[in-house]
Length: 220
Image 1: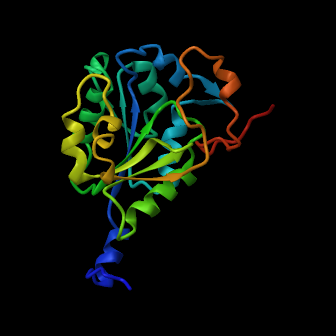
Image 2 (image 1 turned 90 degrees about the vertical axis):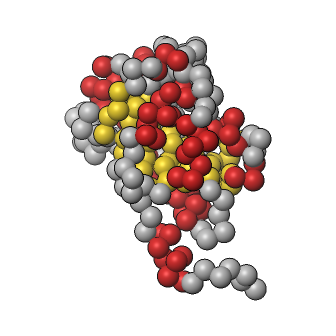
């Protein structure tokens, strides 16, 4: 039987909760060449814009992106609300912090995405949001690849203070590793990692997805 005391109206409200998309596109302390990777061209679209597309297609109400370099701003401007992180060189935690602090107060949760995961599409984000909105879900939900969770991850507002405490290149793993009961992880299709820092990037860019900006292909 169902032991929940939540009336149906409460469950309906859960489906109406505002969830913001937050794309981390500011690089990290140890990988400052990330900016060049974020700008890689795939079918006429800068790589970082795929994360914005995934958040939008997956059902986020508004997309925010944290950047540090003007070249990254140039390709995101108009596609997301852009937040400059002047402290990006200190590590990814500073980008998480400034991003979360700039999300609207109405946001009940954030879908946190990395800017270098072109094979993570809208279906993955939609799946994560559907799982997070279930009445029995944990406060964070991520995709699992081979039994190990990776971004994107949905994190409800009650956990944001934990993320705001992180320093340097620490991320969600430092929060959910010691407290696995906070996180649900379900299998997902897609590229499990961001692009390897020293690999031949173009050999990894084979997403079977249309141009996420909606532009038409002007020719082969």
